[in-house]
Length: 489
Image (cartoon, rainbow, N blue to C red; front, side, top):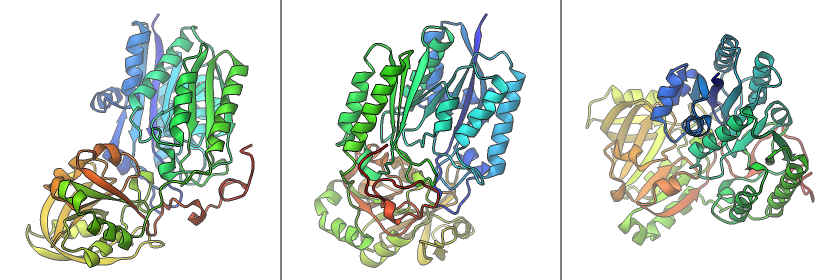
């Protein structure tokens, strides 16, 4: 008889310092489907985890493995998920599992750094609920982002855990495929996963954690080499989302072997030691908006042959910031109004004003500080409406132009990962002197064709890279670098 594996996916990364809850509309804007719609969405998002898992089913299932699609739910990073939204997802999952009592396995794809309004550690909450319905013996393979905050309870409930191997992330499909392979071979009785876990009292983020650059390059190379050993199924290092305020916040290592407990423990310990040894290496230091503009002005060669990208590290939408920071906008208008600059900014109220206006009409908008009134401040901008469009991902979107400054107003937050975000608005990236993005890593390879210089810019915001400036209330101390400690244990 054909064996069945349920597919459950809920992906959201939470910024505990953001005042903006993640709603059902945020999931609908990215990807949300139930039942058979999960497979249809996977066909569209063919590089994501579920697509990789389904490839593993075809490759290793040999026609003897079927799937029960339950849910796929993706949202951009943001504040905590509204409790009602999470409870709705959870209720659907449990109802579907109860309706399919003869399951042989669960494929669970989650971010690992999701927060929910009024609760902590929703990943382990979901695992506990699944266990209550499906029992303690059913194998559950969990695929996490490498910024997951792995907790002891999550490890206790999961059969095994895997993670991305790349940062910027570009192996979603491979992670789903690898998780599927281990899960299918577990169901077939070919492997018996055992898992070792180490939690480090370590908080490091920013450019420090890129997989193909020092200091993490050698560590990821070592992980790949160790996975070639017999009986090693998976090795993961979790570099944690530093903007999640949680009592168990910190880096983690997870090793999965085929029945070899001692080997798993040794490798997890060694990997933790390797991570700890590079803790002193600093990430690239950002500069102020004014200093960034001075650097742009001096970089005439970079602007001649492409563009200069300003990464707004204090308002990183892909790390959960609201996306309405006005600091860079103000500085560009004041110090470089003649330079051609593209600046995305979220403001649902002001984009309505733009939509109510005619094309080429000059209007005045008061942007910023509607969602975040702690770090942000309002700013008045006057410009000509040169473009309007309703988009699925960003909602209502309008471009206002004042001399060289192009203010891109959006209804929902924009990380601006891809050049096509700008080109689809009629903006030529080649002609831009400045392009502002609100993501920390992915733009670095998507903009390779255009980008001649990258400048990280710091102002005030919810995604400060300096952990000393974050208002943690829940984390356990001591922890490096907030405290002087000599051991990760």
